[in-house]
Image 1 (cartoon, rainbow, N blue to C red):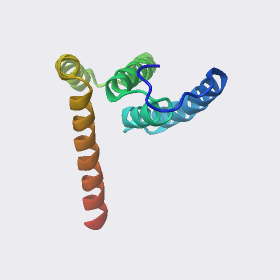
Image 2 (image 1 turned 30 degrees about the vertical axis):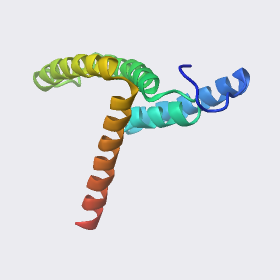
Image 3 (image 1 turned 90 degrees about the horizontal axis):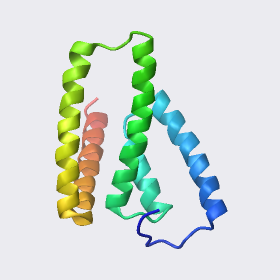
Length: 133
């Protein structure tokens, strides 16, 4: 489970927590979706002791798996607007490749800083939206 800085949980307790968290996050991701990667990063760092780079990489793998299952379902039920989805998917792939290379070059410090800036911006935006309604 990556580099640990938090006290290690027993393997059986860690597995039980991982299954429970997986079920809750899976439900949330399937029902609502936005922010799943951030929730996963918080959980990986806070509960399982990952560093930011390992947490980010692990969250990406889980997000990819859940998104792949969603795309499979929506494609099978003919609910994809391909003229929007294909260009967005291509840009997402290019951004992911660039971000991965940058994260591997600059390491944990860059990932942590970028993550905190994005979370702060989202909190500010949410507060602004709530106050201006």
